[in-house]
Image (cartoon, rainbow, N blue to C red; front, side):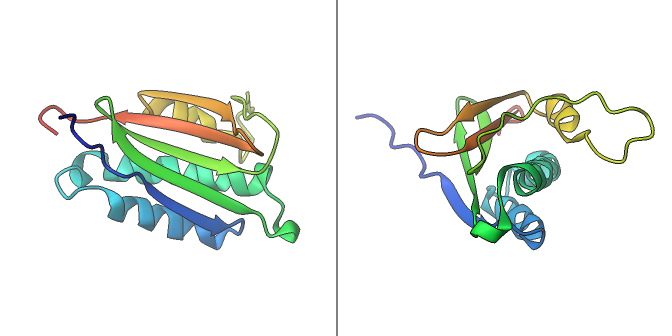
Length: 137
């Protein structure tokens, strides 16, 4: 008989800056206790960056858009998908040294084991990032 996989953790938050903290907290609480010391801080930082980008660039608050998060373990990784209703595709920017923003995807690139951007089947875009389990995790 095959092993039944875990059900992914799933949340929806309003496209509002206060949702960044709520999303970070929800993701941290979803991790098993044994993985929090190894993945918690990095996963929370990735959550903050991706939710902030989704709110700033992929959603319109006046339309009451929602940001979706899904977290799940698979293939030796913990995966985080942040989805918004926007149609744009996030790209790594080349901010100059005086820029105060534009470095979020550089953090994702440097912290995640793997990441990608995918269109959603119905509407919007998802940014998916994975972190490797620690040995023995």
